[in-house]
Amino acid sequence: MHTLLFFGDSLTAGYQLRASESFPARIQEKIDAAGLAYKAYNYGVSGETTAGGRQRIGSVLARFKQLDVFVLELGANDGLRGIPVRETTQNLQFILDAVRRAYPEARVVLVGLEFPFDLGPLATLGGGRLGHYAQEFNALFRQLAEKNQVDFVPFLLHGVMGQRHLNLSDGVHPNAEGQKILAQNVWQVLQGVLGAN
Image: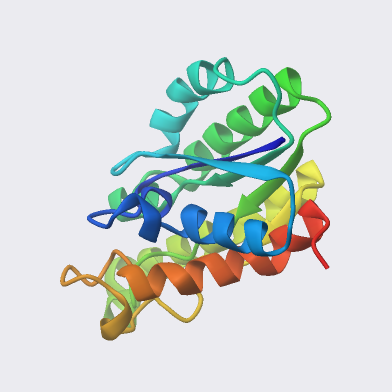
C-alpha cells in the first residue's frame, strides 16, 4: 500500500466537518473507486501558519516508514495575518526541502492559494499596498512549484471562494459541499501523479 500524506491547515483538516467530509477523505473515495493502492493520511491542523508547519514537519515525517506522495497546502493563515510573502515562501521551501531530504523519491504536489479576501475598494488603501501584497501572495505558489519542479494545483478554492452556499457561516471555510469541489480541484492534478486513468 502506497502512502499519500496531506499536510495543511483548516482547509485540509475540514474545519467543523466530519473527518469523512474533508477533501482528503473525498480523495480517498476517488482513489478507492479507481482501484489504486494508496492510503491517504490527513495531517491538517486548523489555524496553522507556514511557520507552524515548519515546526511540525519533522515530527510528522518521522511517523512514516515510507512516503510516496506529499501534498502541501499551507499559507492561507499567513495571508489572513499579512505575514510577509518572503517569510511564507521561506517556510514553504523549508518544508519542501525537509520532505525531499527524508523521502527523495516522493512525488510532491504544492497546492496554490489566492489572497483570502475579495479586495474590492480595499485595494486602493495604503497606496495600493494591499493589492500589491495580494499579487505577491498569489504568485508565490507557482514560483515555488516551478523552482522545485513539483506538481501544482493552481487554486485550491477555485469555484468555492466567495460562494456563500459552499462555505460555512464564517464565509471562509468550505462546507461539506465545498470540500467536494476542493477534492475535485486537487484530483485534477493528483490523479496523474497517482497514475489514475
